[in-house]
Length: 72
Image (cartoon, rainbow, N blue to C red):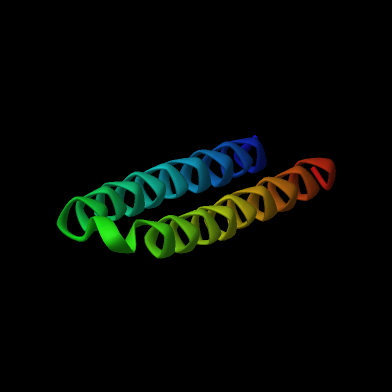
């Protein structure tokens, strides 16, 4: 029973952390583009790369949670 709670918490915390991180990164990127419009291309490229890494970490934690679930 506690294993199922652990799996739920793992998925929930990974999703929450990723959502907060992605929202913060997007907000800072928009602020940077507003301050320096000529650097928007570089900022956008860096933002998309960092969002992909954040999403990959979320997917890795989802896979780990599934592996935990199958071991119960």
